Length: 464
Ligand code: NDP
Image 1 (cartoon, rainbow, N blue to C red):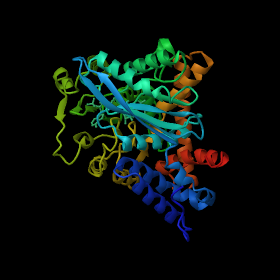
Image 2 (cartoon, protein in one colour):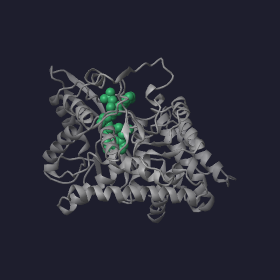
Image 3 (tube, rainbow, N blue to C red):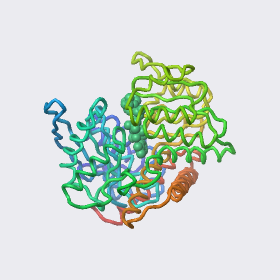
Image 4 (tube, helix red, strand yellow):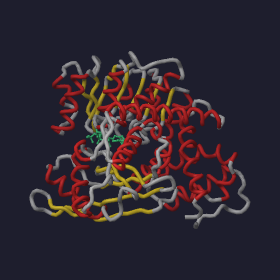
């Protein structure tokens, strides 16, 4: 390692500071990666006090460094016969406890730093699921919005033509994320199978007729609501009757809303990058079905909701505003389910001012460090992403198990396992937070709980 613990440094805080300085110096212009690392390292101060062996093994310097970073050209023809070139990535972050596992994101904002933050988070999240999965993430700056199905297919085929040489069912198993749903996974799987001449569980989120698992599309949203239910139980409270804010209108948002309705809660918002819908009457099952058709079939914009349901209000995105109006709607619970840093300090202050009781993160790192601090200081129920949204990857793990055994479990069986995993993740976070002296702080609980298993595996496996 280039970075050694400077002589004389004994205090965990100083060691952590030196690692953070080095991460910033070695990974310039990657603010999201710095943020994700900072949050985990802050929690690990508590661990290093009890376990100096991690410091002597330079474990932190090793865990912040990806095992492998792949970056490649993705050329494809658009419908006019024009040549398009995108950039593809796969970050193979850590394989100490299993093959790399994590989604692919197709969005114009994708860059190396964003994927490294996601891959880093994934390592701890996957460890928390109790399943044997390492951490990875990938994607491209390709924007599926406004592209025809054939353009999306040609892009996916070109992307997989390069990626296929690096992945495999026992090596690295990608899944979906923003911009990558059932359609894209289908095209990616088809090209992998064609090039490798093998039918394996190399991707998760597959179609039901060709190796997919029941409940995988629902899993992240359902899991997040199960996690919220567990948090509320610790305060002898429940979701029934709660007013809930949900951001985004994609996969995670849709199934968060569905499960909230199962629990008798009342979701009142959805959004996309063009604006926010507030429906004071609540989004019921019929309206949810309409949103699913709009987003998954017609691939339309959420503003149309207000034309269809007249009592709903549409608030267009206004970059001059210093806050997101969605987080200024009075409610009991918030489920950020769109993207990173969508809750700023100002948004968190608005939520708290309006009496929010619970925040459960469906999206990855949706709260800034400042917003997270405000939630923790206010001692509301705060479920950080790497715990609250781990149901998606956990069910991907269940899909891998079914593929290996060449069988399919029923909907009830998968849902039951998902529910039990979410209960177990909550328990790990809750008990770990208490054990390390910060009861109720599930950020510390998740970071430490996820870290220990990976760190011990790394110690066992020597300097690799
Ligand atoms: P989708 O692509 O299905 O939906 C994303 C939603 O978020 C869309 O409504 C999209 O609006 C909105 N959105 C995305 N980027 C932005 C942005 N920069 N500003 C405003 N709105 C935005 O993705 P998913 O639902 O799968 O993913 C949502 C979040 O959940 C992500 O953070 C993802 O990493 C996380 N997650 C997903 C998992 C999964 O299983 N799918 C698992 C764990 C976490 P628009 O259409 O206008 O872009």
